[in-house]
Image (cartoon, rainbow, N blue to C red; front, side):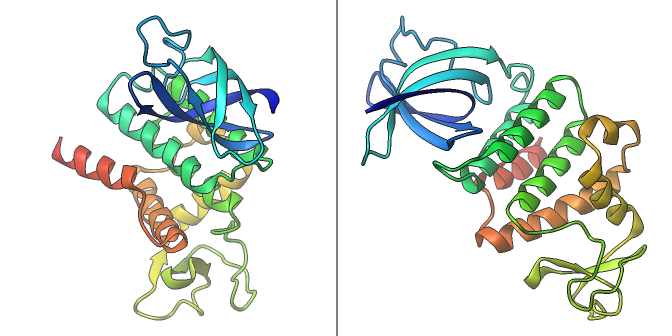
Length: 250
């Protein structure tokens, strides 16, 4: 058995038996982890107030070869995420961000880039960044870090430069030039969407916020990312369906 410690972002916590909880967390060095926090549900637990959704924490755990779950021995709050969890929209968005990492992040693998992406996105949201903008930036980068939906500079079919308009082929999750995307079933992509996809590759959220795209552009980017994500996972994230249905009802 070995003891490990790291900064982590809490992704999920579910009840186990009467006193314990199973906690999922993301670290930069060891990727995604799942562990048991014994006594976390007890009235005077040492974990009281520490297992906040999407909080940044310093966590210590014990691992034993051959076991899927680690044993969490200590959690210390570094940065709470209560500002994001203070209203329904924020709670839904937080669950959506966390589920991305639950699905895309790898266990026991170097995850520095996914960790930095989620960490910086949460930091920006807590500082007041537009939630719609932050969510689209996050979606794009999760896909890019997994080798899909690259920056649209050249057509992947013919190699021609992509200028101010293009097409999206859903079956291939590809943005192609106008010539290759001439089919009626292919979605057209305009200059504002292409501009945002390219800016997101070279600008952080603070820089994007200085010259944010129109709401309609972000809505179309959301649709593109959802199409790519569904094709990659062969299903839609549950949190996304719940978020869209709940906010539509509200």
